[in-house]
Length: 240
Length: 240
DNA sequence: CCAATAGTGTCTATCAGACAGTATCGA
DNA sequence: TCGATACTGTCTGATAGACACTATTGG
Image 1 (tube, chains in turn yellow, blue, brown, cyan):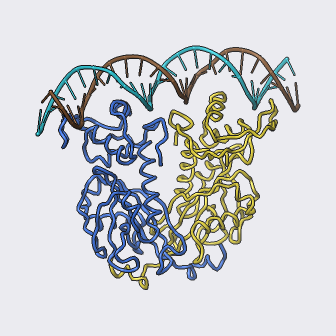
Image 2: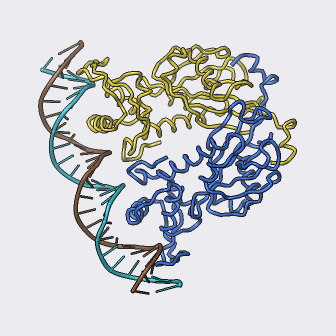
Image 3: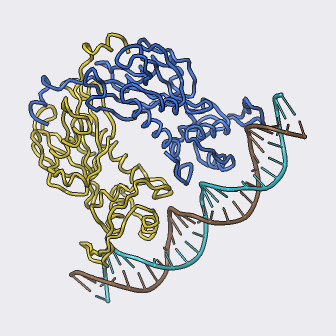
């Protein structure tokens, strides 16, 4: 850094935004996208996000945008995992001006009807493959790739899948989360063994529940207090 | 986001900086700190860094600062690992103005004599424990903690230790890198077995070299093309 | 010889992967 | 009965951890 740049009265001005990759699992891994209502990229799909305000932290801005764009109540927000993903600051990533965007990854168990926010013409849940194949505004392809990669990696050595599975879940439903995120079938018996042997992963609620497609009713669990697994869930490598 | 904030002519202005946590291993894990030459925090230790310029990407700013502050040549920079660590954007993290800082983690094999840059009164290599116990400017304790945690975690499932061990190294030297970063003794025989069994981790150069403390000369290796290990180096958990 | 490092070999407990088999539900 | 899921049990190959042992250097 040079002395002139160190002067607070002559700093180079930037705009700072947050973009949020909200992932959820239904029958597949899905991401929340908005259809932009104005230029640039009017009519294109984009990740929800917006400017960081002068008097809020970046984390607070991410929480605020998550609430605004998803229509989640702050009560439901407690069940959503939100973490910083990375910062994207290429010079020309926004055609209007110099913008630095801090991307966040959100893992949501609920399929809240997205509200669309003020500027968005509409908001949808779309499969991540579908989003990856579609045109996306700004550098949001890069952001989405990073988010899916992060989610895939974190399921291996953390208990975050319980967040995607919902407040409570059967082991079959939990396994389905892994299979949707990793796009890979798992052995049921071995999955049970590993999950139940990992202390703090899941806690039985005592209830039983039958899934939508029939079959025997399974025991219902909720997330335990554990956050990391050592060793990770699978010995082999998960294809990225 | 609101419509008024979406207007490029009325965005909330931020300053964006990069801070770099440069780690290296000698007999211990060390971090490069500068002694600040001006307020705020004049005389305090801080991480090297500076403002992102209007016409450079954030990654480019990190590379530039790394060169300026360490005195490394761009030739030597090729052997240094540099990755984005995270972004710190608390409202009051800089007393002068609203500053968002993108932190980077650098892993360097060389103990270059730090140049100190333009503003720094001096620059030193200090043990990470020493730095953690000392007063640091801004939120640099938080940044340092994140960097050390990231480095510890990445050694487990990547081959990044080869970067810290230098362009070439004996297996004893490579093991020493792990022991310094993790602050934990490893079994030599098991370490050898795992490293040599991991394809792409190390490549023998054919040379032999005797260390500073005598002993039998060891085979010299250099980094292989592999970047990730699956499964990770150790079965148990590394204390964070 | 001694201290220190390099390198090899072996035993064992653990555990992921594979897979068989039984049980329980809805249709 | 059939299709689907839930759940239990067993075998095996891979391997991390522990540790014993020999070899080679400098002092």
